[in-house]
Amino acid sequence: MSTTPDATPMEDLCTPELRVQRQDDGVAVVTLHRPDATNALSLPLQAALSRAFTALSADDDVRAIVLTGGDKVFAAGGDIKSMEGCGAIEIMKRHTERVWAPIERCPKPIIAAICGYAFGGGAELAMHCDIILAGSGASFAQPEIRIGIMPGIGGTQRLVRAVGKFNAMRMLLTGRPVGAEEARIMGLVSQVLPDDQVLPEALKLAAQIAAMPPLAVMQIKEVVLAGMDASLDAALMLERKANQLLFATRDQKEGMQAFIDKRKPSFEGR
Image 1 (cartoon, rainbow, N blue to C red):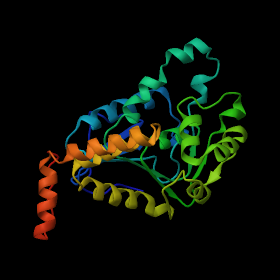
Image 2 (spheres, rainbow, N blue to C red):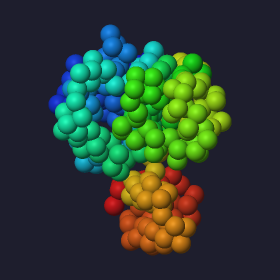
Image 3 (cartoon, rainbow, N blue to C red):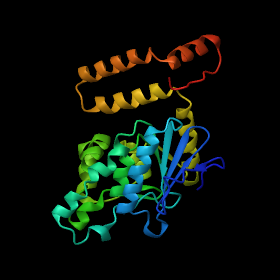
Image 4 (cartoon, rainbow, N blue to C red):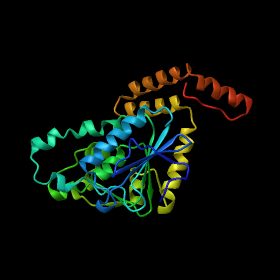
């Protein structure tokens, strides 16, 4: 699985464990790269992800992001070797919530392209994304209970919001993996594709989103996420205000005029 030929490495964000590329269509591709460790989320890899998403969030040339682990595995969980022997205070001082915040708060749409395992922290990373495309051979699990702990990067909270209490409890209390199609039926996965089509479809989808008016895209993402935990009345108010705000943008004028003129719009994010 490879990115398209016009992808340019963003050298200042790349590390031995993470690759970041920008394409000409406004899409950035972030690739986990620990092939000898099934992309386990080591502390350096988590830090690299944090830096990358901080930079991509502020980059006006990036309008959508694809996150992948390659064609073999997405991420098989946290780095257990770095946690074994740690005490509660040491784990607390790692402040993973700060490390993962740039992904959680990224205003750009994030598409996860998942082949193989997305276990533990890998599943939690996927659930930080906005759309999940999975290969037919992909599987998802929160197996932390099997080593005497529990998810600590949002697994209990995002999973129950995605699949409901009863499916979430089954996964969390057994640690049992679910396949891609079962995950789709539960609501965890947006679409299941042949493994070799996952990244190409993710790139195609990201390019389609990147061609949309960026301010509208960001407002939709912000309102959906903010409204999920609000009352319906409050969420509808957020929606109305965001919709009203977009009428102050050049892209709204361009989009409506292009519709009237029967031509393709050119959106600038203004």
